[in-house]
Every structure is written in C-alpha cells, then in structure tokens.
Amino acid sequence: MFKEGRTGSQLYLIEKGIARAYSVRGNKELTYWFGTEGDVAISYYSYISNKPGYETIELLEDSVLYSISLENLHALYSTNIEIANWGRKLAEIELIRTEQ
Image 1 (cartoon, rainbow, N blue to C red):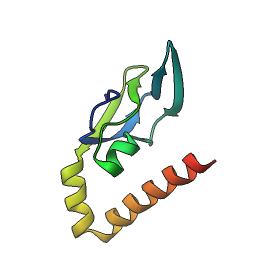
Image 2: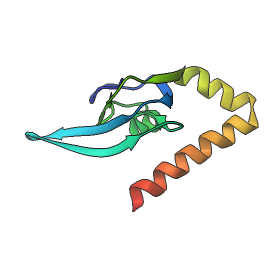
Image 3: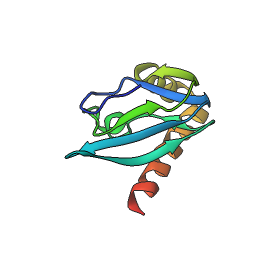
Image 4: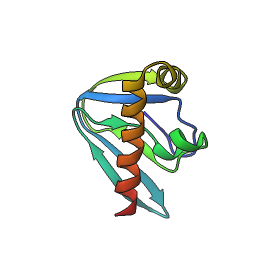
C-alpha cells in the first residue's frame, strides 16, 4: 500500500479489511496504527508535507479499498466545501492523535 521513504500520492478508504502502519527502527517494528472499515489509510506526514513518509502501511487481510489521488482530492477541496471541511477534520484528528 505505502512504503516508508516514499511520497504518497493516494488516499485510501478501507471498506473491508484491516491495515497497519509501522516503521522499522533497528531490528524492531514499531506499530503506530491499525485501521479498519471506514478508516482512511494514508501517510499523514507525506500527505501534509509532500515529502517521503516515515511509515509503511500494509494490509493484514483481504481487503476492499477505494482510492483517490491526492491531486484529485485537492481539486475537490477547492470546489466543494463539504469535502474541504472533511479534509480539515481529517488533519485535525491526526494532529490530536499525535499530541496524545
């Protein structure tokens, strides 16, 4: 889905399945997040900064995902206030999650 060290270009919505975000530090894996149905799977750092992400996101079982390119998503943000507000809330949730 997404590999550490790459810049993300897609946002995924998990319809069915489970995903995990993790990084490898030394010889250990550090898990940051598990996503399930209805969750968004994206490298938030890469999404916000347009730089390579620090995590890998993998699917843990057979899954059904919907994806949209970040380019198309940003175009929607500029033309649809409801989607723009959803994107703002998505960023706020991640900010709160990382401050805890």
